[in-house]
Length: 290
Image 1 (cartoon, one colour):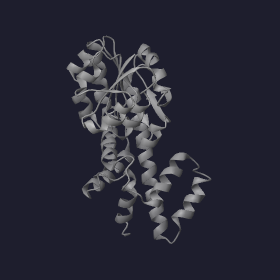
Image 2 (cartoon, helix red, strand yellow):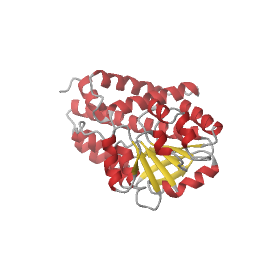
Image 3 (cartoon, helix red, strand yellow):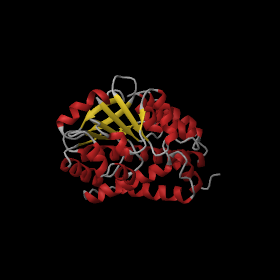
Image 4 (cartoon, one colour):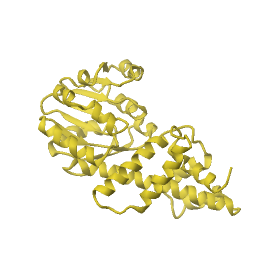
């Protein structure tokens, strides 16, 4: 089977590597060619343009930063270059509006658009332990599931690609609210002479004993915001997408408005490249803590 993988950022690098050397013809593309070198060493072909990468490809994977990047790559020339009936697996976190548009343009071109955004940080991607949210035409879903298993565990959300992108936005909304909640709670404790560390031990082993609280609570306490698994810039982008999806579907989401304000304050401080858990540092500064 002829495969193409477009987008070799921190997530895409590890994911594309898991498709190399498994008996398929894999071609990769990235705007910065230096990121293709590790994949070429694993046996992948390197293309100079997106259209060259997908030429004759039966399945095309994309994982790109935002709506604009995905639109610029998956243009009419690229769709035409794919094999007739080819399947595009879109793993980016993008707007529900763009997902609906791409589903229509792919169908009109005789191609298949599948939404398959993922949950997990780069180390999880490299380990093949992501959580994948899949939706789109049934035949396409069945075709790609064996390959998606290389990336992690797949949950099927049915025939409408918009549904999977909505799931991704809802999940990121919940993660962001956990980070904000922990940041506020830790700051309250610090200002009232209680130990955030001891509090974390209590809640992470009792009433909130779940990976999300354990993992993000630990990151917040360690304060390692300069090592970004997921940047504040991308977090701000996702919050904007959440707010847009809420407006389009007339869904009141007051907490999303709070998060949008928080990320605006973070970007105004110039913290775009820091990990999105820098929310906690912003909260401490707002509370007058050094």
